[in-house]
Image (cartoon, rainbow, N blue to C red; front, side):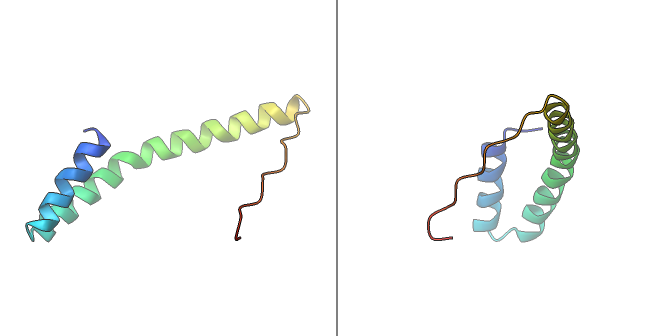
Length: 68
């Protein structure tokens, strides 16, 4: 998979050049490529949370965002 910054720049250039179809195809391909990584990350996070729970870890409360 290409570096995300490079891919984003290439897609922006396609859009600026009014090559919407090609840009859309690149976006779709990039999203397809990222999906397995997102699933893997979600599974790893779930596993970490299970292990933390087994160890009795209680996460600190998330700080509130200003203006929220």
